[in-house]
Amino acid sequence: MTGNHTSRTSPNVQVRSLRRRAVTPRFTRLTLRVLWELQPGESCCDPALPGLRYRRVLSGGTSGKSTLRAQFRYTHPFTGKRASIELGRLPSSPAELLNHRSCRGHPVRSLTGGHQVLEEVRAKARLHRAKLVSKEDPRTELGAGGYTLAQAKNLHLENIRRKGRSEATIAEYELAACHLSDLLNTPLQRLSSRSGRELIRAYHSKIAEETGPVAANKTMRGLRAFWNTARRADPTLGESPTIAVHWFKEWRRQSAIPLVSLPIWFAEVAAMGNHIKRDLFLLTVLTGLRKATVRGIWCEQVDLKTGTLSVPRPKGGVQRAFVLPLSDAAVMIVQRRLAASSSGWLFPSVTSKSGHIEDPRPELVADGLSVPFTLHGLRATYIGAGHAAGLSDRHVQLLANHAVHQSDVHGGYILPDPDALRPSQQRVTDYFRSHGLPL
Image (cartoon, rainbow, N blue to C red; front, side):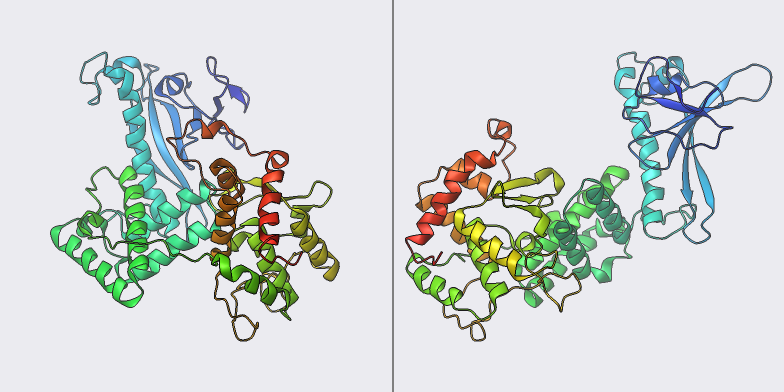
């Protein structure tokens, strides 16, 4: 039997003999019907959960019968040695599945019972994996409370990293965990009690007093996300304790620069002595890019031949990557920055660890500015200018890289084309020129 023996009915499934030490290839689809085709001595991995393996082993005696077993394999967090945990037997045939508690003798239930059996095994494996992420030995039993808040947090962060979420999103969840640092070792089951819900409500009020109502709401949303991720792995968990929270009302800040102040703002920014910050502010207002994106632009992301800027990892992760057309004024700014420095960053900094400017916030006195603004306010100014220039809502949405709502089925089919969006981008720049843009 070779190490890349392929299942006889599913081309996506690959198995190997337990006697071979070669790495088992992962497959993309798994059902009990696929596992039933394993021969004695063969095993395969679960693509949904690293470390989870299914194998068929011969039963004792001369009957030739075999059983299907699940096993969680991992590297010990302290010794570095390979270890495994048996997760129990699975139905080895359709007849055994029919007698399983998920079917209870009903043939119709066997259609979904197989999926339920696999999910129960995966839930056990996730419990062990959560302890592994927390640098604990999975063989030590979870306490009576099951997951702790720290384990739920680590499980959630591992999940969103696997989905390709941006570092800014991960940082928001880390900040939420910092606000709840005193509760990280608390079992979730304890927080689901009446006293636990009262405690969470008290934390919500405390964070609001110390940091603000917006930070308090964000922390509770982070807690709810940790809880829901753990709940998928541990069905015994009840409703999140955030159900008892009385949420603070949030208002969107009106941070856009007023129309009457734009000529003054453009004149003052153009006269700034710090040319790196000057060009960063101007490029932001001409493109509407987010702060995290514009400050970390690599020179390689700019294509002067096509007049475009590629954004490979915006807010929302790699699946939201897009190519933004640049107006003539934006191209002039980029050319000016490329000629001024040989650094790999468009906006370099000799004092930051990353090599690019980290905190480009405006300093009114030091920069000689009189109109207060923020980087996000420049993005809001750009969006407002797009509407004022007569752009369609769809083009403004695409240029700003705002997510299409799930209910907008039609919008989900529209792919942003830089050449199609270029005239709209230029109209925004022309609108700014009519209000004092010195380019």
